[in-house]
Image 1: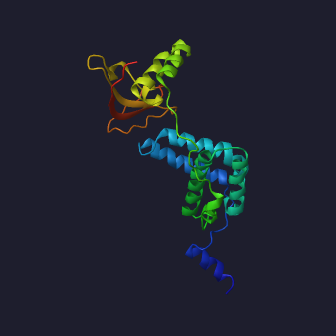
Image 2 (image 1 turned 135 degrees about the vertical axis):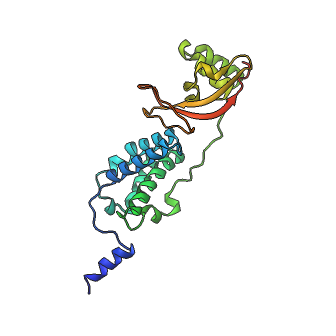
Length: 226
């Protein structure tokens, strides 16, 4: 009778069957799955880069080789606490917690865990994630000095960013065909990312062999005068 109870609990999802899979292995599964979302245009490449960086820098060195079933909420609280005492801002710590929780969610869904241990953390153990100060914009004089003192090769890029409000990925994805000099309009049709695969959000997409990835977008912007 006693032998039947554990197997029944496994079938009901109350406990997970024994597994030696490590946190690092599940993290790879999660990142591979997220890459699929990026390829489908449902998530941004930059989000994938942030998740990968957070896991590689802050989580894998601590938990990577541990069996994921043996990682406890107390260990997670210690990890978060160590990041806090190291001087990381609350917002940065939240950037670690998000992919960390997603890895445990995937482990629970695939039967490696019966429960995500992140759910056992008390709210006081989690960072608030609020910015300590409002972001400050540069004054006209500061912009002028910035453009005067920056290397000449970067001046057109910085000037375009300042006077158009475009993101750096959008600027790097521009071609001459995106710029209408007569109408003074820049049409943002793509973003340049660090990937090597084409992952387009548009119905049609193309790829030049050996060239970086470009995301299709739809937006126009008018550059303001200096």
